Image (tube, rainbow, N blue to C red; front, top):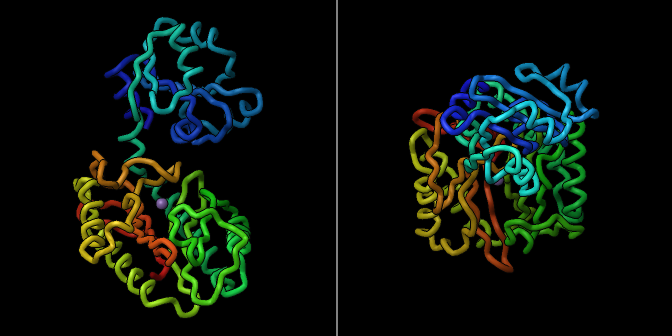
Length: 338
Ligand SMILES: [Mn+2]
């Protein structure tokens, strides 16, 4: 990885510098709340951190020289007249100002994008374990999803199982019941689940710093025929979307296939978000599957396929799998029933 990134650094300057937590973790495999990572065009890597992390970092970080951070003036002494490359989307203005007072700085948007999109064996393994953990946790608690339990209580039970398996929430779990299910980013509340409710559960776990992102929609008791109808449309749209996944297809096209399917069934105006997004170190990363995306699916990207239909005051349905992109097809990593 260091070699690949270094090859790109050479094209724009002398060193790539990032202070973004997720990208520091992506490059070094080490989590910290403070770090500065440098990758030089001549294939050297440096990880600066402070006293809280330095000993552990020295033990755990292999490909990077670990050094104590002593401020921007010492960085200038260390790097001299080097030309810095930074990611304009991932640097604070205050840090950028400190750097540009001392160095020539080249700004490149999404500098690590093409590397982060293509997952290594180890990354695919970690995501698969994050999927397996989340799936098992849901199976453990699904019997609790019945009239009387509140959304929060269900979330708490699920998260306790994440902890049981040595994991944690990859993001705030959404438990959206009844009319709340019609709001795509419903905030889990103390509302009780009622007989006849539709319940959307959007959840993910973490393994080795990598996440899963799964959604299932459940009908508690006898849901209305309209909800059953939209469930079938979303499910078919999702399966059609997964079927279209392969290396080389544009993300805009995958989104269009799913969107056209839902529109043909008369629910187009109720599908109010994109079809999916990449996952990895972060819950939302590249590529992005929506009508405005310029991204092309690459082999070994892992993306969500998550159409939804949300009818105000009635309810919503969303079904989301994490899909590994293969040369000629996509492989869903999710085994939970739909
Ligand atoms: Mn998602």
